[in-house]
Length: 233
Image (cartoon, rainbow, N blue to C red; front, side, top):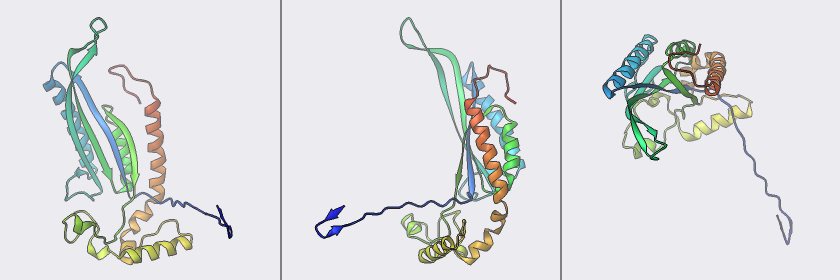
């Protein structure tokens, strides 16, 4: 851009920093079609019971406010629908006489060392169709006005305890100082750094498992539909 006094340059930049995830979210679905709603619901419930029993054997617990930051949690929702087909003669949707029951399952794993065992458990249940894996990082132990606006004095349930919390200015100073030193991952606050030591030790294993899970998800997405009764190894 220019003006009467000379030439002005407008410069804009963008930076990204890759960090190790704090936890992974895995979404999947169990589905069963039967002649009645009762039969379909019972079938998916039985599959869900077997799966959650295996998750519990890994130390998993159902998700709620008290267990939100546990190493392994699961939550689910269910639904049922009547199956219909398109009648070519009338152009209408006609009931097929069958009902499909579904359970949407979400598994959150914070102990990334368990990803190997978790992958084996999920793969052992062919009725579970995985939809995706997402990796997340925690926002960090920074005090802000969010807790007060949310009406949660002393911090949100499941959030970092006050012992680990620091001010936004300290967080910014330590993060920028770490980036200047070329540190790829910064844990601001001394107490928080100590608390995160076990997580740092599992970074390499998490990265390897992440690549394997992404590869498995891509393979499943590109695989052709299987006839009823066949299981993909």
